[in-house]
Amino acid sequence: MDKEKTLSSQLIYEGRAVKLRVDTVEMPSGRKTRREIVEHSDCVAIIAIDDNDNVLLVNQFRKPVEKELLEIPAGGIELGEDPVATVRRELSEETGYLPRKVERLGGFYSTPGYCTEYLYLYLATDLIPSQSYAEDTENIRLTRVPISQISSLITSDSICDAKSIAGLLIFLAYLKTQ
Image 1 (cartoon, rainbow, N blue to C red):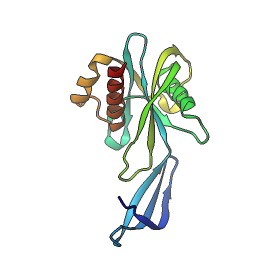
Image 2 (image 1 turned 135 degrees about the vertical axis):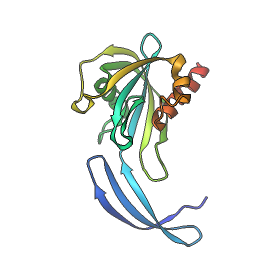
Image 3 (image 1 turned 180 degrees about the vertical axis):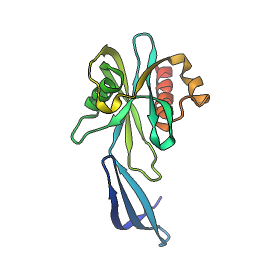
């Protein structure tokens, strides 16, 4: 498939978490159009499993959708940070646990129609308690869910964000190969 050729790019907003740019592109047919692109740093998404085969999920209020969502832990990779270090930091901050074992399960783009964010998916196991919490995680509540209930939580719309659905489905497929 032919690529679109970028003719110009203009940064129109730069915030703490995202940048917004507008690219003028030429389609393979020669037609010119514009693309609005959200630039977001890459992130990690974490499937954390405790010693009792529970998945550690977090409940947190999401302002853009004005409701609390049940999600897998996740967070942004800081400049120069190794993704495994991000897994350890984010899991500790959001759940109060550190993983002794971290395994890469894959990855995916969150919303490639308009955003650059890529999520590295990791499995975190052999969890030990940690005392590290971040200020912005004060309204996050830990929820433990048996692995056997994950599919029904997805199909019942109790888990409804794309990152969590994709991550958990990849994890369930991974379990079938073990």
